[in-house]
Length: 231
Image 1: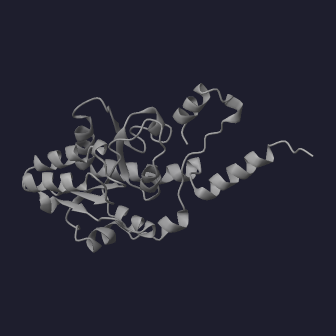
Image 2 (image 1 turned 45 degrees about the horizontal axis):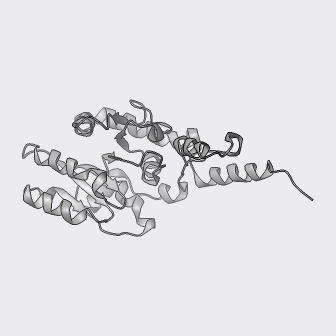
């Protein structure tokens, strides 16, 4: 849940003192078993690539077509590569777009994978993409990116900014600006030191904000303890 969704619920008449915001989280054990970055890239044959990664069920509104257009404008020596971990209704159109632009070799889709395998793919990302998101959502992929210490780009909108801070654990862009996402990706693509800083801050966010399912369970238990007992 997000504070934005809490506001929507409150607007429907639910008293504020009966609303508690608990964001999504991660299972540390699952992500601690992820391979190292270089190892993960090598396993996918992407060791010489700058990997722009996305996870999830791919829909048109995610805006990955803009990423493909951006890669198509790169010079031939560019190493940027889009890795999409997942599947979805927009996949066929995105693959056709990459074919038409003669960059199919620079775009990869894993298709549907098991939940336990997500981390080994995300570990290969150099830049983690959260290109678009519903205004009230708490995207699970975001917490996976954070846990694996990825340099994240995302739109500067309230629900994401409950977790992400521009210049600290992410580069946020104006979702209204036509070139906003491309500029954010370009900034991170050109600055390895910034990617490293963002990644370290991202992983620290999980610890500092206690964004794990275990901590969420503790929060829920504490909430139940506050409920008055009735005979």
